[in-house]
Image (cartoon, rainbow, N blue to C red; front, side, top):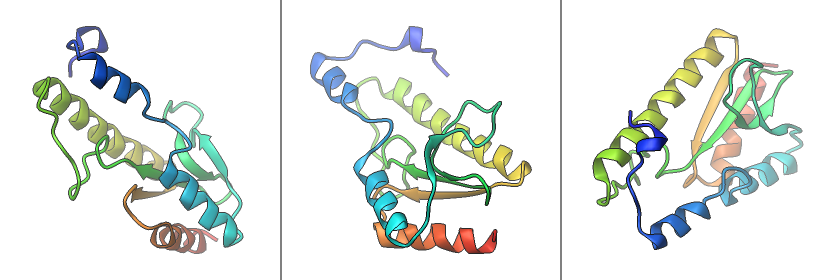
Length: 141
């Protein structure tokens, strides 16, 4: 994968748009958190499930060992909505493939440590996503 030092130049409009991308508290995360809270679930947000793993879950239930990730369709290559940028196409292809590989690695490491990982896409309804999370919580109770 290309390092960030070798990142190709982008135009000002693209740079400004990318700088506005939130890492936490995205609209899909907030909607899911509201729905989970409405259903009585209590959780932590933006925490690393494993102390030595520098990867943070969007929502975490540490006692139940359930980690929830709300994956953005672009950043995590959604099979339905992923797009491939035309500008700097090779760099972006490597970047997005690296994101997916890191997701799979995270899932494997957490599973090995006894965690349940729930991944939902940003386009999923908060109700459907909350159903998945609640089912996982019930299985770990």
